[in-house]
Length: 582
Image 1: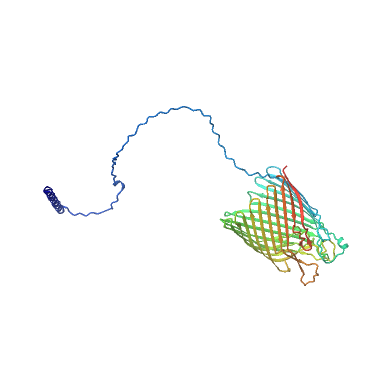
Image 2: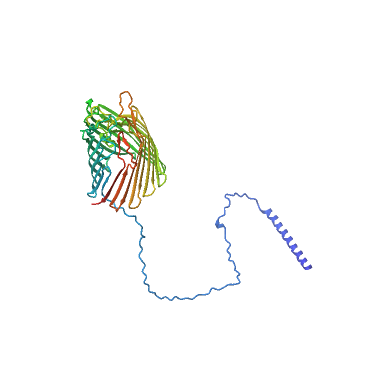
């Protein structure tokens, strides 16, 4: 024990002596070190190169250490015969849709009640790679048989069109030729005055219309003159009426500052004569000779979702027969904007124009007009409209529009009063004439189309009209409502069907059975609204031959489309169609 104490005392003495020596050295150094000024230019920034890595290899103290065994091996290769030959790769098969055969020609023939006949023939001849000739023949007729009428009501409607088209490297041109023949009867006798059987038998209500047309068109690819057309049409009847109508319309296109300017020039001539005026006692000639000259420039602006068409129309009308010359300016502005791609497209327009009324146009709208019309132009001051259209989905599309228009000298059909001198078949209050008036029209239109699939399509449309006339009591024979439903259904590969349903609202006409003495207002008659349902059903035996049956006016109403002119009741017609190639 004493030995350990002695060692501890010795260590303590040595430690104290060491401390004393170090302190003494520090005092001596403090007395010898001189003070200096140190200026730090840049702070010390360590870098990777300043660091060093401690290199050490760990020592593993594993109690079990196995030595790797050395493997010795050899390969014994023996060739093996093989008869396998890999097949060449080929593209996978794709189910192709069945190719629909196309035919350039077809013929249709059908027969029905009221001794009706329907015949059509269309043919297209491909002369060579650039030229072709087309032919279209149409005939529709009925021997009549409407109940409770006393005059013949048969009709014919036949026309033949020929056309020739040639396409060259620099331009395309075409020529069109056509003839037509129509036969109608003024069978709509009013209730008064009451005629005797002998007087009725003496009436010849038949009217024949004849027409011919000749036209040509040119279209250029690299000229300022882009296209031009010239059309001439002759129209007349069995009562010495003649009408000549010629229209020439060249179109020029120019690019100005990357914008396209299109300009249409219009030369419209109408001339002819009627055999007599409606009132034969006036002894005044009933000729017409009108020339309309017009120009319609327009600028199309395309900006992202906006399409804007800025234009105007300027016309100068020369009525040499009545010594009346007029100058007209009309707006031609339309626009559309995609609000939501194809879902919502807003559109609108402000348009106007000059319309030349012709005898043929009157006959096509109402074949029971008298050949005593007064013909002039209709001045459409403006037609303003705005609407929305688009697709709700891939199945449903829509179109809604509202409009307001102003027309001066709008042509309205009115029932002619019985004449004192009844010389022709239309002098008995059984024909119609034109009256002109300034009409303001407020309209609304709506349309829905359902494309359920490739086999089923349905369309529904409705129109509403509100008229305001200046001189006439009513907007004669113009309906206030129109509704249409169109359906097309491919039942199977062989069976197909379709339907067309129409509803037309009430119309107003003059009651010619009531005497009229100016200034007493004329007495009007209201024509009832009518409903017309048409259905067709067909069956295809093959790609070429099919049969069909059509039913018209299936509601069975003998409604009056025109005053005192009831239509045929239920009409059924069946026939076949054959398609072929030469």
